[in-house]
Amino acid sequence: ALATPSFWYLFLMVACIGWLSNVTNVHQIAHIVGQGFPSLLAASIVGAMGLMRAASSTVWGSLADRFGREGIYSVGTVLCLLGIACMALLSSTSPVWLLYAYALASGIGFGVHGAIESTATADIFHGPHLGAILGALELGWGLGGFLGSWGGGYWYDQWGSYHGVFVMTMGVSLLGCVALWLAAPRHSRRVARAVSGA
Image 1 (cartoon, one colour):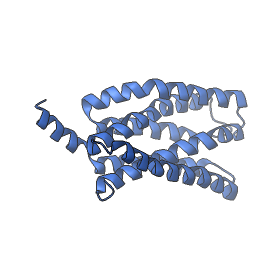
Image 2: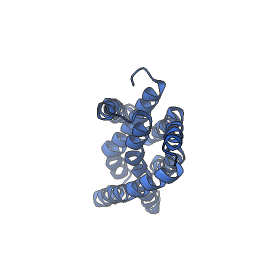
Image 3: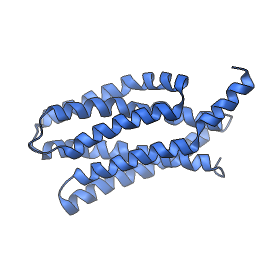
């Protein structure tokens, strides 16, 4: 698997997911509170996102089984981009609905990551070594997560704002989507369907 381009495209995708997850997990409450919103509101927004993420994962997985991994992941990425854009635009004068929009779009959009990461990997590398491959890909998540959380803190220390961090995270999210298209699990699924006669 390590010798195939598909593995490294998946590794890049998972690293981007790690960045996105850790930037939001580590820095979102600090950003919201830093713009003057109450801590309880910030915590409620994050909690609502977690619920929507969990609830949407099953739906994303079912849709991906029917319509393909790449297309459904792209839809989820668009929602993530919309949500992160809300955070990038957030200021002390922003209306509170911008936070609700962030929670809704990101909460639903983030659910696509868990639903697609493992299934796309299984499409390409199905077999007795799948567990080891998934474990190796998690190294990418750790690398991306470290860079995202550390990079976000460094950015804030240098410029006193998280706005640029969230703009950068939008680019990282888009890069992860491109990486999945390049990994191309759709080709493996097409071969599997042909072999099974489905």
